[in-house]
Image (cartoon, rainbow, N blue to C red; front, side, top):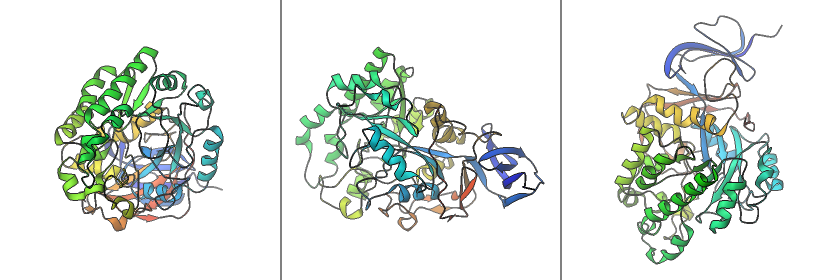
Length: 439
């Protein structure tokens, strides 16, 4: 006779109804079937979680795993390994690969590549182009699709929707949420004379707050006029936060741990091109403005914008150095650091990284520790200090801008679809990741 449970987690502090409570979790296959202190029945596997905190699985809503095209930087396999080692149970992966994910055929190919090769759960963005802007209805029933991604300012790769006519068309025609890299391309072109060879600090002068603000104002007004919802990614300015407060019916907002943890000029003095990203890390006043937006609810979710490049590439003289840094393995640790440093409530951290991504994008049966929900769980030792190090980074790039940062909590385990992917920081080499399902 088979056991009632495939896995029982005993003696844990579980994050339930916005607080940590003592409970045992009984899991059957991939579903949480019982929450109770204690569970005495037998199970295929029983793990003692004494002293550990268990959270609903962390979802990173913005990663670039570089496949197809750049396996030396990242693959779906290596990126998802980094994810689970950092406690991330699901990712939204971006379409600016080589070739870009801008057709149903290429989208299906990416799903085929991901099958049985990803440690964490996954969904993919469909890339908007001027050519497909009138044909986005194909995404409506596309399994494993989290939304449509539109670059209105050029960044890594060659996906770009530059003209207002096509920008509006994408927002109008997409049956799914349109997530936008929001920098004004015309302004970026006009301001190229601000780029100073060898001076990475000219990066945030060139890609100015006005470049971001001008673009965000435009796309927000398109959304409002069309009565459609859009999602603005990696918001980097206090100006956008102040503006978007009044657009919550039409625009959801995402920022990154980088824009909450680093500021110019200090981070550029210390790390040079290793903190170069688009849109850039800016002065402290912008960081403070974004924090205000996080705390007052203007910011809906936090995504890492994990965008790895090799050390050799990053060491090239600016502006030959590419923009982007890794982050999927450190996203939860950095937000826990901010909680433990008293900057943010734990309830807000879990909302930004788990609950809200599920409700905003319509992810089925995830984002809560509740009976009937899928057992995607993030396990942390809240009583043990941890130091982020380049040696720990599993991404193919093998570095982090947060090398040497100390956190008063340690990553411990990651449960994917009821399977123990990581426990006591040891990775199971089996890949348990599946495509996320959406309402």
